[in-house]
Length: 109
Image (cartoon, helix red, strand yellow):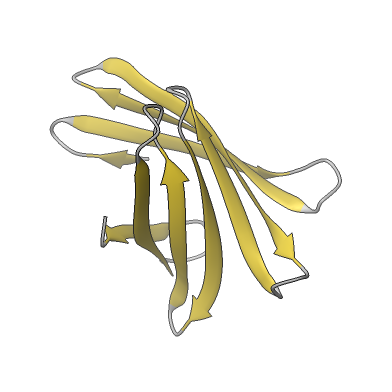
């Protein structure tokens, strides 16, 4: 859960039934109203020898990310397409905060 005055982001993550992927469902609310939902799948890409992720949102957008381990967490270089066909990219970082939490940051959007 991540909250600000304007919005909330709620996520739920679990292993896929076969144990090969992490599956996340997310919901974003703005001013108490559901604004977007989506899914993310994270798995190992043997051709790159890195983790790769795929995100699909309820507006029709999608993105793909390549994960790289860094000191103190992970950095993800993500590229995607918005529903209108415009492209998007960002650098995301995940820094562990204990066993079950991360600080998530987005830069270079």
